[in-house]
Image (cartoon, rainbow, N blue to C red):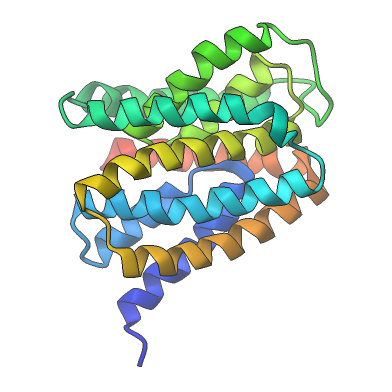
Amino acid sequence: MLDPTFAFITGAALFAGFVDAIAGGGGLITIPAMLIGGIDPFTALGTNKLQGLFGSGSASIAYASKGHVDLRRLLPVALLSGLGAVGGALGAMVLPVEVLEGLLPYLLVAVALYFAVKPGLSDRDAERRVSPRLFALTVVPLIGAYDGLFGPGTGSFFMLAFVTLAGHGVLKATAHTKLLNFASNIGGFSVFAVSGVIDWRLGLAMGGAQFLGARLGAMLAMRLGVRLIRPLLVTVCLCLAAKLLLA
């Protein structure tokens, strides 16, 4: 007989994969679900990195298979995201994160407001504001390091950077975000795996659910584009900010 708590957490991962593939913020769903299920916070963070690999990997494959991501060109950039996450995860062991916890809700509200009120957002590319090299060497590893150090909202920050600095259309930004988030998940996961704080049975079950949910979410995002991504991104950012402020 299936453990009800196990089934609840796995079901939460399915829904999280769907949401995360479109707008990010899957951790808003999976980490509270694990904490409600009695998983200690440190194990929940490590297990979340494991299961998140499946969701971000599934979404990346889905977007790449439809031509929204040039994997060969973007892989070096993804490597920088992963290396940044390794550094961030190592820093998390010695650096206080209270400042990030205090600033993050307001940053997420700012992201939500940008996507809510910015006129002219579409799936068409716009003018690039920074060079690809500068973007890859500065913005990408910084956001990757944030993912390793703290995590919530990483996808939203990648989305904002791709739209405002790289000039990507919303759908293209979403597709590129998932690949770089996949890479940062690998970097953070590697540190947690070495530390031995991952519930492998639960994490792999959640990963399977994440994979399916992310595939469904990516398919719907590619079908509806900015009409779906924009409102869901705004909603996810505001929900995550509210959760952090009320915690």
